[in-house]
Amino acid sequence: MAGLKIQNLYKNFNIKNENIKVLNDLNIHIQDESFVTIVGKSGCGKTTLLRILCGLEKQSEGSIEFIGDLDESNIKRKVGIVFQEPRLMPWLTVEQNMAFSLIKERNKDLAYDRIHKHLKMLGLENFKDAYPHQISGGMAQRVALGRTLCHDPEIILMDEPLGALDAFNRRKLQKEFINIFLENKKTIIFVTHDVDEAVYLGEKVIVMDKGSIIKEIPVNLDYYRDFSSKEFLEIREDILNLFFK
Ligand SMILES: Nc1ncnc2c1ncn2[C@@H]1O[C@H](COP(=O)(O)OP(=O)(O)OP(=O)(O)O)[C@@H](O)[C@H]1O
Ligand SMILES: [Mg+2]
Figure 1 (cartoon, rainbow, N blue to C red):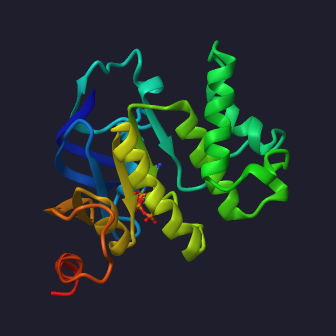
Figure 2 (figure 1 turned 120 degrees about the vertical axis):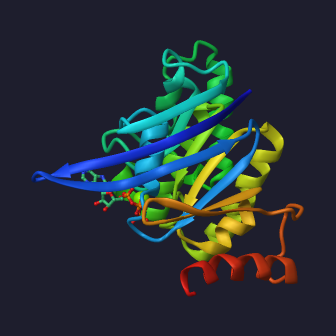
């Protein structure tokens, strides 16, 4: 059980004595076991928000309240993040990189099963012994995704995890995210700048612009969604129109 409540969140950065306002009074309620997507243009503050949520960055003002049995002592274990870039360890193989998050797992059978389930799901079985420099950028991103999924956090933060993938793998993994969500009932916060992806995946789409939330849109369509249905296209247009008024 894990949700979160963000209240009056601000983030400013200081560069050479200049105060840059990056996040401006964000208020977000993310329910337990929900799939929320955050969409917005480059530089609107999406990564900064995720970094604050997983404790890598401190907010300037405002509060984040985790709902459920989450607190500062277990946040690292229960909140997992897939970064925008893979950040693999070059001296470890694909399999070892994925196993890294399970290093403390005492049940070795469980660890093995989890790693192999995700290697298969991500289409990486034949590359398990390869090193990061021997695989493509999209494959590296899938390994990074596998590493976080193997760790099995309660809240998964994803920062454009499919940005480096080709359209075919992207579509396949979008479906897998829905499967992961439906089967494991995780709380997923998924950042993207692809409006179609945001509407395809999210039960709620949060639209950001220049550090603020400009709209929250519930998507009351069953999974798996039809990209070309009237309802889908209407929501997509609603979002795009926010930027082209
Ligand atoms: N550590 C930092 N120090 C100073 N400024 C920063 C820092 N991190 C981010 N910023 C600034 O905050 C703003 C938002 O950056 P952020 O990375 O959150 O955007 P984003 O929405 O994730 O963009 P993209 O879609 O390109 O990944 C940018 O103007 C960026 O320069
Ligand atoms: Mg970013």
